[in-house]
Image (cartoon, rainbow, N blue to C red):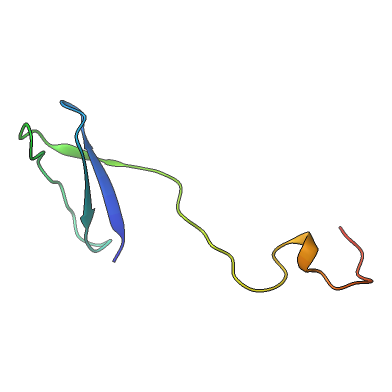
Length: 64
């Protein structure tokens, strides 16, 4: 399951929660009790294997 980060607009507290993508989840801040909003950020992508970089190409193959 994915991990989502939430931030309180009132006090700035941050929390991480794990839940299904299909579930609507709207937590309350543990410090002030206000509703928290989801923080959107870039996903982590890891490429494994050959062919993802110019240095992985075989000798004799042209770049481009």
